Length: 205
Image (cartoon, rainbow, N blue to C red; front, top):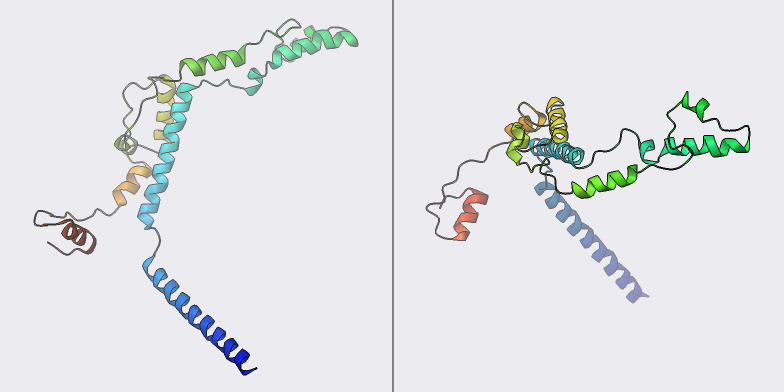
C-alpha cells in the first residue's frame, strides 16, 4: 500500500513539475512574441487589396464575359423553342406574343454559339500583351503600365479612383508609414558572424 502511495505521490510531483515547466516556457514565449506591428499589418492589407485590383484588371483583359449569364445559356433560343414547339402542344405558337416581352431568337431551334465564342476567346487570348506585369513600385505610385489593353486600363483606373493603388492610396500611405531601418555599415565586418551580430543586435564590427 505504501508503495502505491509513494508511486502516486511521485506521479503528482512529476505532473506539478511539468506544469511549472510549461508555465515558464509559455511565459517566456509570450514575452518574446509581441505580434505583428500595426504599420506592417496595414501595409500587408493594402498590398493584398492592390494585388486583387491588379488581378481583376488582368482578368477583364483576358476574358470578356457577357453582361448576363443568361446569354451563355442561350436563353433567347430556349424561349423560342418553348414558344414554338411547346406552344403547339397547347394553344399554338406564341413566339410573336413572347417577343413583346423579351427578345426571342432561333425560330424554334438552337443556334446559339456563345459558349464556343467564349472558349475561343479564352484560348486565343491566353497570352495577351494587353495584360502587362507590374512592379511593386507601379502598385504604390500608380502609373499605368506600358502596353495595357483597354479592359486592363479600365480596371486599373477604377482601382486608382477607389484609392486602392497609386499616389495617395492606402498602399502608398501604409508603405510610407513603415519604419525605415537604420543604415548599417558592414565595411568593418570580417565574418558572417560579425554581420549577423551587427544586423540583429546592433553590435558594430
